[in-house]
Length: 489
Image 1 (cartoon, one colour):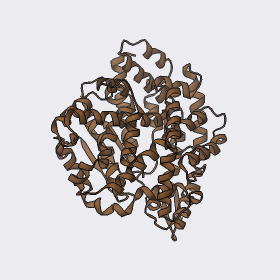
Image 2: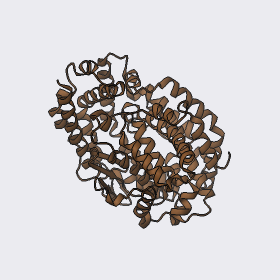
Image 3: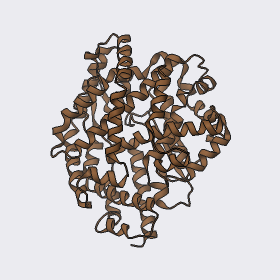
Image 4: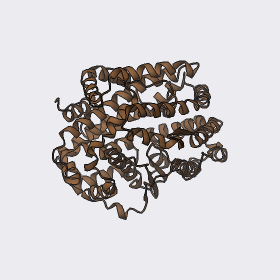
């Protein structure tokens, strides 16, 4: 197939697929109908397409991104029916609570807002029990993904994505293992303090208790629901970006029973139609979530529409995640908190958000270890206990085995998150060096970001960090951030 014809068809496929995922994730419809979309575009992934793309005259990054697109599209097509079954089961599921049936997807919000630990534990267990009913579908999907991945000439799923995403999993795994070990004392000391405040012993703690810690209702007065969207608009305006004039960004923050509890940004047509979707649950985390997804939305909405397909739609996911973290972590900045939230003495709050960041880095570092075992297991169910063991040990609360598959994103996205966290800390230091500590109030910094966003995902984070004057990705910056926030620098 002629490459230009391929790119036109690939863009049509992406637009159709993303529109379907948006409708299902936004709770506008029950279930997911992706098999017919894949059926219309089989020619993008089947046959010798993977080998054919290798022969095209393309930039190195562009070719690697397209090879990833072909391989991932092939695997997702082969498992589309199972993904539909899972989406249908998830949207149909409910949990009985207080004498009524609660849609499965809304239960996490109830868990975070439940102040009674006995009721919280009971509700979480019902949610996990419902989650466990999806595992037979997801186990079959995992086995099929593993089997089909080997058809691309790599030893297994792990090696395929390590190569196509240029992750260097071995080195990243070693660094995260060392990070987890080095932060044990800091993490567990803080965890015990927060659990003690809730009158819970660590031996009795469950992951929903950590969810409750991060829900932090005592700070709700600083983060009222009615100021959520105005704060986003003011923040972007400080950067010289008038969000209300960006007709290509649509904010979907209305609560719906079938809406995914996990916020997401869906670029239906890059850069002309970008949807930001979230299910508000209350408090400070809504602000973090909205800013995070706004980082994605601004990135996609500012992409140069003349770029090749691969640089507009594909690429290193750590790039867009780093832009999302850059805006999200404004809530950790004293100057931003004072200006936007009138929060003049945020020491306790900053300790909490520092602990939050530490928790997530440890969690995703642990997931990185676990997922390599999962994707090499003959029987996925054999590693359910390993998931429980690793997450419970490194996070200090009972995780349980039920989510050993629902807690996994395809293609080692956990590694992309980790690389994004590392790059965000270095990127922010670059902005502070170039535009002052309050870079987020400087329209010149906004123009710099818009220029970066225009490049889509042409350059992986390893190239961007060198462009900003660093030798490479360095965990030291994000570690320093955490220690500073938690008052132990």
